[in-house]
Length: 381
Image (cartoon, rainbow, N blue to C red):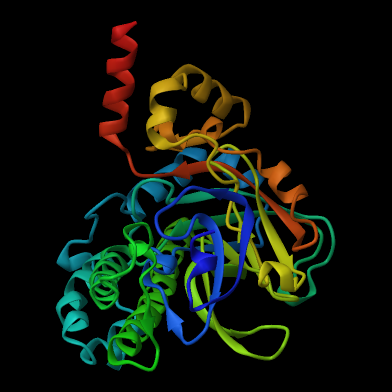
């Protein structure tokens, strides 16, 4: 409601998975005129999904489960500050992008970005093996009906994006110091000004970096497993794009926890570590600003989940769903999230599901702090 009242706002929408967040709500979409709001993009710039589909029977997961678990443990890095040793650092063309030299901030961040390329954050970030079910031919992916072994990942631009977001949110707040305190997180930068143009350049570099991040993760994991992808689907869901409204006017569309869903556009909407994700095709619905949910959405906040959910129920549910969890924490359990099928049913006018992915081996950050809180809560009983 606050975002829609900004003088730069043209149109807003709220997705079916929406919940409270800083700046825009998670699941919020906002179109602005001539300006970008760093905090409406979010701290994890270009947080995104990537799915790689292998032309291999998913039965291989059951036959060589321990091997697939080992590959995830060996070829991924998770959590705040996670990086690669110098001898392990991957190479990727994004590191040669001229934009790194365009701003002093980006020059300072390049080496850190290199060490974190091919890593994932904490919280809800993951890399997982699973089973993709395709019921009807997906022509643009050349996928025939059937079941496939697939790899799905969720992460963003790591420390690079977080630092860019913090730097330019601070600048935006300084430019709009007279804004009411409750609007400070929505401070904006005009794209006709130096700071706005600098943020736009940095944001887009972070987007390319996040895409490269997923590419490296998938290359490493698939190569170690001896597999090759025959099809991929990927999309940002924390970003800002230059788009046109129905009347033809150009706007900046901020999607903070929302999937681009223009007509025919493919994307991935995940559920939780124990529930399905869906490959979707956008229907181009103008009222939602060509957007859909980016997941199931949280039902419980992190602290509420840690203080109320039962670890035993979490573990029982994963066993029932045939999911092996490597790492993870109680605040990311399926019980902390809304039902993904209910969310999908609520947005049938925004996207059409074309395939379903069921997780089987899930790698997440091992949140020892959260696990410690779980144990302390149990001891109090």
